[in-house]
Length: 469
Ligand SMILES: [Zn+2]
Image (tube, rainbow, N blue to C red; front, side, top):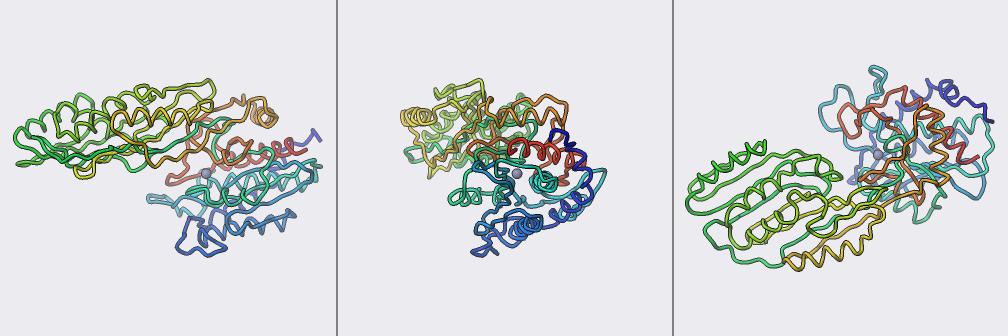
């Protein structure tokens, strides 16, 4: 049994693998709740892709199950234990600017180009063929292997929520929905708002009417705008603003008339998992405004931002800084800032914390310090960290397989983001993006190299076999 050349097995089926991947990608499986039905809650496109894969699976001899149109699975093997491969067949909307039809799945320069090629229908087909190969060469398994097919990964994960309420949790598994080699640890992610507790009447020489920046907790805002009203010296402020922009190598503008002035600032967006990779437009603008005496409400808001968030993405000022060897530093992204004179101000924060961090006590600290300085914590949501011990048989097996198949070291990676693997109890993200390949998921002209599709299929086939044999 050790003589199987997995790559050869895939190459023998390469033409069919490519054709099936293309057919699968031609289905426009974008969320469309408006046209959803009780058995196809996410709309006809997603349902068609789910039905397609389940029908293929039945034809190829797998046990198949459609779980209320929310998810499905294909299973083979026998035994008490269950190995899971968690995939998803929904894709994000195609967006603009494509060089070819986003649902044409055309081949250009050795790449299949389509929305979902890399995320996650291409890798789903790789995992499907991996199972199919094991089945066709009739290898004995002592465990069951189940491909779990999610349909709402790109939105709210209602698929896995629904699925695992009624279906078995695999003993161990992987999600082909991120990077090779192996992502074994993911930080916890908490979103919440800090809101000014009291709103005072707006009086004073210089009043902040509004301040807005950012729309999403998990992104560094790339735009901010503040509107002020006051008497005199507004033109001077605009001049000082130009200097400030220059000193900080920023783009922006100040526009004033008799008694109002508007400041706009362009920053650099980045994912909230590493705020220092971007330039937070809202924080820069707040740091500019700090030099002025505004009305009391606005002063309180702007000073709070300056004291606790500017130049501090690690929660040091708030007293919640934490770091561990597995996942590194706790990080805080100020994703949303909004203020109006009549409602006061708030900050929308995205906090990512290491796997050994006790979030309950961190939350308590945040509540205490906010309370002390006139803010309250609201709209709290939390997704726990995810981590599989590096000596777990799952990790050991995947490392061995990856090294045999690629000749490269299978380093273990920890990230600040969340992958689909966190919906498995003992699951890791395993491929499909090889080190050095650009991540084109969610972008125009998304593609998957055919060579990578083939290699990935071979890796998955051996991995599934080794986990379930
Ligand atoms: Zn994905």
